[in-house]
Image 1: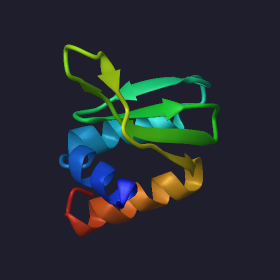
Image 2: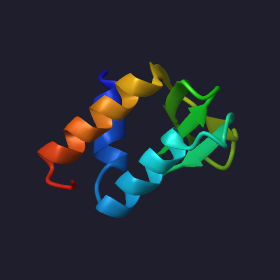
Image 3: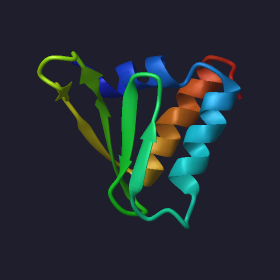
Length: 90
């Protein structure tokens, strides 16, 4: 399962979402927090480390997180920018 590919397909689909996500990742003032996207959550562990995961609420068992991926800031930005260029978002 390619978690990064699924994240990019689900979240990087417009310039508005792209800019919001990049802003959250780069904002120095937010040291720790979460960005809730369409399907995935980007959890900022600190200024340089992130965890990407889908969050599903089935209503009965509560929130389910079936898988996750940790990434370093620069690698995450590089992958987002590469994908956004491929899709002509930027």
